Image 1: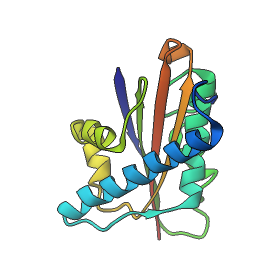
Image 2: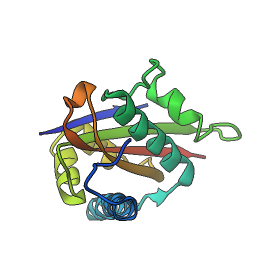
Image 3: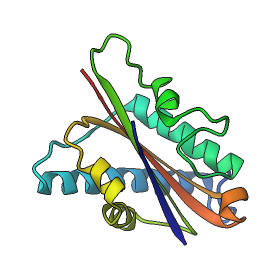
Image 4: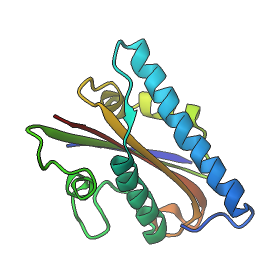
Length: 166
């Protein structure tokens, strides 16, 4: 089962060791960024730069969704995604600030190619990926066995937070 969600404006699986688990997630995140930038290049768009603040916002949200068993752009307390991201990726000192977000969960796993295929097959996700205004991105993935929206299944959750400040 796979589900994707878009917005514009964590316990590991028991069978994986922590170091293997971490390197698998890092490879997934890196693969998502590489494939996303390859798609953007084919469309004549600039590559997105990894931004540690956007990555922190994405990681916090992926972990929260896994821990609380929900899947949504808003935080568990109802905070809109753009307010959540702004806590990490501030608009202070910039005349223009904009963020967007793509989400995905899949059970039990997903690779970067499949994630990008699903997003590109969704008009709203595709629009975020091909938005020429974005300049930076944070990508975060978690693996977990989660309740709530995930029905106790082992899942991989990916959050991509897009941003631009100038």
